[in-house]
Length: 208
Image (cartoon, rainbow, N blue to C red):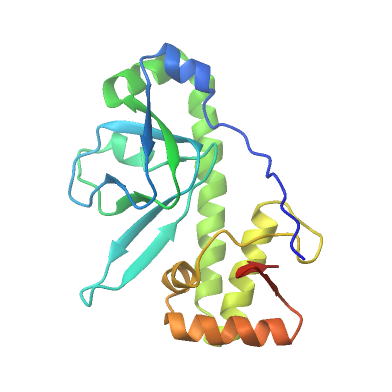
């Protein structure tokens, strides 16, 4: 049986500070677009609650997921420092509440509070570490090893140690998009991992 754990998180920038600097709160339904590849960056985005994904689509129409930010995380803020359009899409995975702050107000806020810049740099450092570790994991050729290592890495990233207490918040299709594998391969491999007692399935959810 999977145990539902409330994950602890920190806000990259305190919500009250954002709201005092003219930020607004916007709700997105699951599957709704936050921004599209090719559009110009206009806002700082920070997730109040929910789950989003940053993705691109290959020529054959298949999706590749770059990252899946969640509660307290900001995303795509580095684009605000350069005059180039987004090279990724952002979409809500679940019903998501996002705090948005316009680019000029965001830059003004940072210029008046250097501690906020330090928070952003720390968050980006942690995010780059996560991405490099994930890329190394995705280079594994064996599908079983690749999927299990990705699930284990996500579990460790959320600070959960006990066996089978982390409920993977992704569908089989999302795991396929994240790992670059076919969904049929993911379904077959997850069943194999369950038989090997490396994961458990409860109500269709994968527990690691």
